Image (cartoon, rainbow, N blue to C red; front, side, top):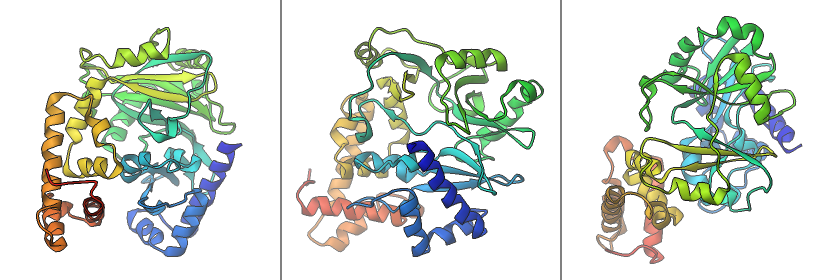
Amino acid sequence: MKTKNAVQNLRQFVGALVEAGVNDWTTWKAWRDNAENAERMRKWFGYEQGLGMPSITNLVKPFFHPTLPLIGLNYSEIAQFTLHAFENGWTPTLCLCRGIIFDRDVNLVAFPFPKFFNFGEEKQITKPLPGGKFVVRRKYDGHLLITFKYQGEIVGTTRGSFISHTSKVADKMLDVFRQKWATSMPDDVTVLLEVIHPTTHVIVDYDKEGFILLGAFDRNTFHDFSDKELVALSKKLGVKLAEEFKVESLEVLDSYVRKSRYLNQEGFVVRFDDGERVKYKFKSYISRWIGAKLSVGYVMNSLINGTYESKFADLSADVRGKAERIRKQIVKAATCSANIKEQRARLYGLVPGDECNSTHKQKCGKILKLVREKQLKAA
């Protein structure tokens, strides 16, 4: 029922976009900047904006097919990097915005994975994990491809764009399967694949290309294919299913991913019998991932959210050292004098001019508030 209600909320949202003629970034920005529309979004998404939380209009990004009448919904980077700090930030409706697709008649066309979280990282999963049986399968470091049938065509998209580089690469890779899948791929099923290709490299190095089956959903019933059903679908489509990893307990799995010698692997996805999923990532992967993204903005976010110590504690010495140097720069700029105008100017100057936008300035304001409250002190 929760999923059905969330999808209905998204139908209303998409319907409002269609009615307003929203079909690209410019028309979307104009629509979302209207205060009345922002309030409608807040209600549809069940989002209560507490102190320090971003506006709902900054948490969702629609994307549009260049030729077909399709609209996809994806959560934004602001959502990804800030909502973990708030107990109720990720609402059920917002969690569905991970590449869900509607047509412009507001029919649900593709239903991918709802957002799920890393073990021990997000406030959303501080609740106990489900008991009972679970299956552990390897998590690959490619890009998710949401694959579905529309008007007789096999269509694929990443969770944020029909025309991203990965979407274009995957579309060519799909040519090998289109004829077979025209009959073997169920009409109402969304097939979720990992795209592995040298030109879509993230962190892990792969020496081959291909698709790996991760999951599947019936878009009418929201049925999440069981492990047994995925094995059968894998054979039917001729695509390898993500490798199963046998482990006796989640405690053993958690201990395993903390070992630093596994340098070229991302981690695992645990799926429980009730369909709930949780990610376990190797500490070595997290270290490389954060190291690649480490920036003034990233460190500011961790200071603002109070997660700086926990986020960097288990990472490599190189990453911890780099993060600490950035932290000291931020604290020094924020405490350089008693003149708040000078403090703000120093914080603004920590990033290149084209990155000193409203989002960065908001972060600087929050950093200065921490200084005033004596939660950040001069090094």
